[in-house]
Image: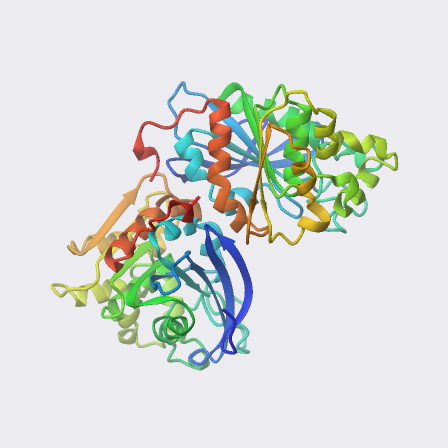
Length: 292
Length: 292
């Protein structure tokens, strides 16, 4: 689906649909941005709901599509899968590539307010606004049916985007999310430099704080999977803080033995896609030959 | 499953089983070798058939396990998946790392007979003899039930190993195999340097020649999938040469639009695992909680 706005980087047949990767110029990030998209086989006039997946630290727009094995389920369920990159890249900001947990590959899905990052690091607006609008212009997207999912830093991103834009997203899910970034090292490092020293400003990007603020109010349903053998659970994720909220709209499943890897994600991703498909009104494909 | 013979490099829960990676010293290759293995959940005294997957040029022991999404089906079907590396590495042979299609990552699953490669490049004996014996000593492997599968250079490897050791392998399958390496550039480059100039010696590693030689004789059943949009089909793969044999034990499926990527493999790998499971007598798991 070439256009002046989108540069096609690669395209592959996959489960009777198309697996594609694009580059475009982002107005929000003022830089080139890349994303991957899986489009199931569909009728000429058919539109499909979109599930956005946000990846974690050091990952990029390819990681989920290569490692999670989700396309099979998306093909069966009739869901478009969309995976943006984890940050702007090549912005020219000094030191952007120096640290694995800050800058390139670590955009934390927020709109930076502190210099020099505020000039480019606007992943919240990119993911929730610019990218969905771009996708709607070029792909067979069904109206307002959007879900959001993510892993680790991207689990934080999915919760924050989904809770703050709860009119836009009908369903939220996460694998091993950074749940209370204002209180944990990766989050504190990122927030202090992207948002500045005023921790009051951090709360708009803290899932725990957002859920506490919404206590008693409605929000999209949330599914979270967390492995008990995850080496980041104790210091960085604090997923148990979300459990302590006893939020009736949040389902948190604990899994003995599972760690932080995509082998964990791949084991349970079918449940996440089924959860989103149900809330997005996706229609299971009738032709079994769509799926091998 | 630690031992002096095996060094565990990583271990992850995956689809209720274990995904692990090991290093060991290979007698055949006189070098360290690595492999990945997926072991489905199983009873204390239960043994399972083994399916070996041979990857293609530039790949390693991780590629298939990360990209193919096969663990779900292996967990359902009760198959151990075994993925060796594609060559010895760090052997000290001058120039081993200089070319992407020869030396490191390009062992072509043969026993080299020409110096200096003959000192280390013994992937045929490693894959068909040393590695299965090692696996049988350390994992719950079911007697003699082995299948072999591969992609591209590894599809060549699977066909050659399975046809030459037809008492050992009950089933053979391939994605986009290098089918007649004596006649095509990657194969000719590799064979001339690993085996020497005498093309008569090459025929023992040429699938087309082996199948021609076996015409009218029995061999394990073969399943091959080939995409028509594969950019290597015309010059390197020559899969149509196998089709022209009209071998009743060989099923070749052509797929419009599909290319050479793991997105192609992932789309059809469930059929390959089901094919091997059937011929290996694998027993579908009765407990649905083994698979999510």
